[in-house]
Image (cartoon, rainbow, N blue to C red; front, side):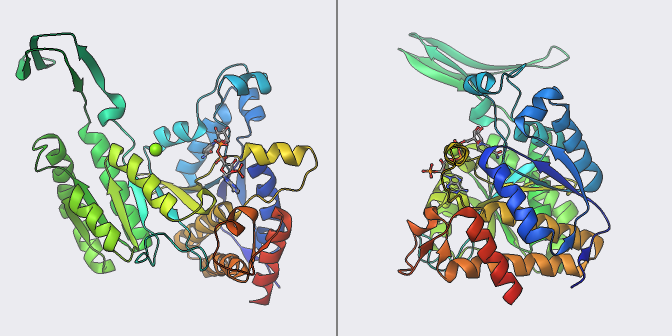
Length: 401
Ligand code: NAP
Ligand code: MG
């Protein structure tokens, strides 16, 4: 059979440890036999990041801006132990952090649902995609432990020297105070990325804050979302048959628990931190969670939500058999290829992506899966395969389709 041709290259960011091993297996078994792969390859493995003084990460982000779609393997974020292990020149920053900052992007995470591994919330039939605003609020706070009686004030001094001043509290004894902030520009980027992604995936968008209590701070979030929607997205949403709706965070939580899923839930930084762990743990496994970074101008970088699975890698290096789950990494590739197909009008790539995802899920539903899933599936006939045999089983299913 002729291979699917591509017109624009995809930006390929290779990574570290066990996921680097899976990366090659996935390419050899599931991609190269079917697609005449055009990719601009960047090796974000820690060794090469160190050799290039992390320039390769910056180059890969610039290439993503140029071509619009990237697929990324999990990478090590160095800590003191890694500096020693890899004899690093420096404790390089997290590649994900660097890329996110350069693209001004928002991360969307969604569980991959499969029969036999049902979410704990029985009504969830479709995945809930969670978008977390990754700037400011309590994550960039300034705090004071108030030692005793006194007056706490909030003061803003403008560039022109003008002051705005408000009393926070007249303390009659010890206590605590905290200052937090956000920026209109960052909220606007977040809003645009959410609207873009909703359109791109044809899903409703929910957004919630506590603006009944926080009448200036949280209200600003709501206003920026509303204005951006009215100005740039309302017509597009109508045309796509999808909806944007705003509600209070407590109402959103109650509705989410009774929903069928299949929408995007945009959250402020803290809400997103907490709620993404709730949604992902209710769906079973970190190895079944996809992640995509979307910039406000519609640039996409796909990856798995998990890390490099270090513990499995050390077993692999000792020659022991490993059963690491490649599903989220496979879905990073299918997500990227589908997007490339949509942008370039190549139906073959879209069909390949749809079929490869189906083949992956039906392999699992047929009882062949990796060890992490065997532990949580309700399928009594589940069989544990090593990573390589599982990927080969997916190829067999795909070919039979
Ligand atoms: P991790 O790689 O996500 O793995 C944590 C544990 O989760 C594993 O030991 C394994 O549990 C389980 N797990 C995760 N993915 C799995 C998969 N695909 N199949 C089966 N089991 C899976 O997190 P980590 O060990 O904390 O971090 C390792 C390295 O990854 C770190 O250097 C970190 O900096 C990096 N990291 C990178 C990214 C990224 O690039 N996006 C994200 C997070 C972490 P068992 O051992 O119990 O089997
Ligand atoms: Mg968290």
